[in-house]
Length: 288
Image 1 (cartoon, rainbow, N blue to C red):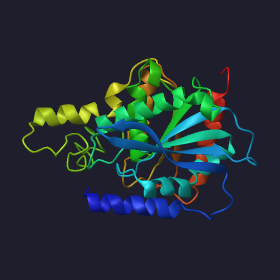
Image 2: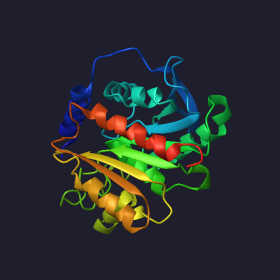
Image 3: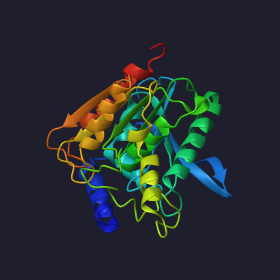
Image 4: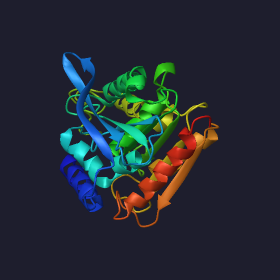
C-alpha cells in the first residue's frame, strides 16, 4: 500500500472515531523529556486522573503514540480524540503517552529502544507520579499497537510490563494477509535507515522478521488483549488472530476481541476501549 493511501486511512481512522469533546478526565503535562538520543530529546505527555475522576489507582499505563509509524503532537491529539486517554484516566490510570519517533528518522528497532528508555524513565520516576513501578501496562493502536507488541516481546528485566492491550496491530510483515512484506515497510525505512537500496533478499527477509512480533513469541510473556475489526482494510484481522494463537501456543495468556464489521476503526470504538480499560483493571489490580 502506498504511503499516501496509508496516511489517508489513518486520518479517516481518527476522524471517524472522534466524538464530542467533554470535560477532560485528566490533567495533562506536555513534552516531558524522558531521554536524549544523539542530542535530541525524546518526549512524552503525562495524563494524570483529574481530581473529579475515579479515584486514582496508583497504576500507570504506557501508551505508544504512533500512527503510520509517525509520532508527533498531532498524533497525541488523535489518540486523545479516539478516547483512549480519557477512558484510561477515568478508570484511574496515569497514562504516559510516549512518542518513540517517526520512521523517516528512526527504524522500528530504534523506536523499540526508545520505548524501553521511556519504560525505564517511568519506573525510575514512579514515586513522583504516584504509581507502582511493578504494575505497569502497555498499549497502542495500529502502528502504536505494533510497536507495543514488539517492545513487550523484547523486554528485559527492567523494562518488563505486566499487561499489554492493543488495537489493530501489525504483527507479521512476512505474511501480511498473504502479501510478503506487507505495507512495503514504509519504503523499507522502518527496517533500514535510508531504505533497502543494495540490500539482498535474505537481508530484507531477516529485517522484516526482526520487526515482526510474531517471530519473537516465547513463554513467560505478560498477558495480552488484542482488539481488531473483522473488516479491517488496512491491517488484516489475521494479524491479531494468528498472533493470539501463537501467544497461547507458547503458554501465554491472550484474549481476543473481534469487532464484527469493524474496519481499521469503527464509530463505536469507545465501547471496545472501555473493554480494554476494564481488562487492565483485572490484570493490573494490586496483588493479582
